[in-house]
Length: 122
Image (cartoon, rainbow, N blue to C red):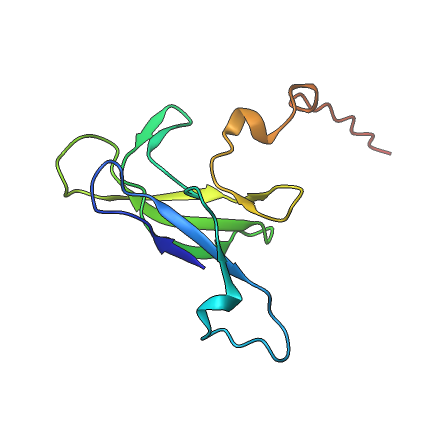
């Protein structure tokens, strides 16, 4: 579960709480949940564009069924208004936790960026 983690402003962040799902788990019991001790998403530059006051959002999928996270933030210091919508592809760390701040340069290894195709017509 992603939740709003601070006051509205440039320091606005989102947190993540997880719970083990399954038979007999009472998700209404606060003890069933574990909260990260750091923000899952925060303000900063991303792919060359500022995203300030990153807020809560929603999950979706692209045409290839890759998970996406749609959220609001501001691209400049226009005060506390003027939020823009952003979409990030979600990656997952080895421990299964979502990674929201992987840049385009990090998504594809440099050795795999150039693709060559040979087409044979018979």
